[in-house]
Amino acid sequence: MHEPIQEFVDSRGLVMPIDRQGGIIRGVKILGVTSRNGRTYLPEAIERAAPLYEGAKVNVNHARRGPAGPRDYRDRIGVIRNVAARPGEGLFGDFHFNPRHALAEQLLWDAEHAPQNVGFSHNVLAKLARRGETLVVEEITKVQSVDLVADPATTAGLFESTDDGASRQRAAAAGAGRLESLTLDELRRVRPDLVEALLTEATERIAALEGELDRLRLADQIRARRERIGQLLAESGLPDPAPAGSPERQIVSESFLQRLMQAGDEAEIRRLIDERAEMVRELAEAACPSARPVAREQNPFYHQPPGDVEAFVRAIA
Image (tube, rainbow, N blue to C red; front, side):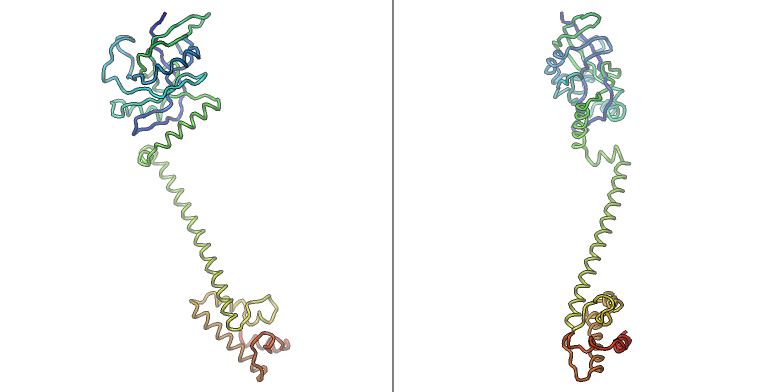
């Protein structure tokens, strides 16, 4: 015997994967495995019924004159598509709704903020049997409509959350689908605080990266200048700064090297180096008038007694 069933569905809430522009709420629960009316749906009955719900019309509330009563055109809000059975959970699908329907904004607000406020109730013909104390739905033979109601009974809202890993994966996939269709304008409208937080974080990160880039650029400039100073010193016959205590260290000291590093441009660097080179030559010639040093080994400065070295340092300091 086939009997009419007007069955509410109840579920617990999840974050709603909603496509506002397309008018789609994805992964809604249409039918659970048990109901508050005491009925239990056989797994095979749920699985076989999935094609019957494909394209099912969705109305606001049940018909006023009973399950078989006519429906007002104003009640029609959408259709169910992509219906699939989930073992142990029931039937799920995508709810395609008219975004210009009078109740569309109310539906979207509930879906996003209070999914327990709304759910689906199906209006079907089914084959029933009693097994002990349980009334079992063995087969759903016809789906007349799926109605959007305020007091669903086999789920607590549009979506259902369970503790098993598969359900969490489905929820993550649904959320990913929602994010893919999310626009910046929609995010600004729904979560301006989140947009502001993201902008602040991005600004701080950009500032940190710019600071690091400036530091690296400065380090590269210092390295390049130091290399160029070494080249100019070599061209003038002056030694590059050597370890502390060596005679070369007295000719190009740390203080003199610092002056070169702080010089305004290469012309000034060359002038300072030329002045130091000329001073070294003059002092070397004064120490040994007949010498014309052209290399370190020939430069009498490197062979002066300690007293003469100290006098030389004082002279060029």
